[in-house]
Length: 148
Image 1 (cartoon, helix red, strand yellow):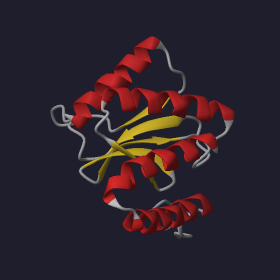
Image 2: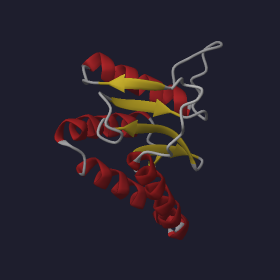
Image 3: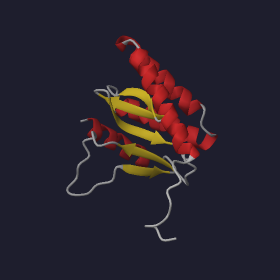
Image 4: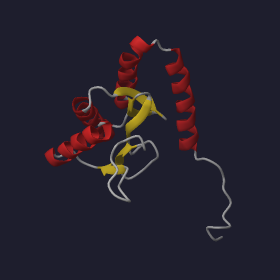
């Protein structure tokens, strides 16, 4: 079958699980008191990170540390079951671990509310395989720019 005639079989099990997680996140967030939301969001993010496979967990812990240091005003929360950080209620940056969708590598992604515009084309998701001092600095810079 060609790509244009291939039958769509629906969402994968991983995609359906992510959508269910997102629905539960929305319900949980709606019930939280605004004063407690940031602390609860931090706990949710740390729990998601703790549940990851060791290699992804190590990356996620460091990314979390970098994001929190670079933009402490961003509110940690989960988004489709991934650690994420929001500005004014909208997810700005997220960490997608490799096991989430059985990918080769983890990624650091930015949504359209991020202030990363650079001409007519720019990346919105970055593969992260190893955290070197250069990669850490780049993540910190991207997060600061995105939150700006």
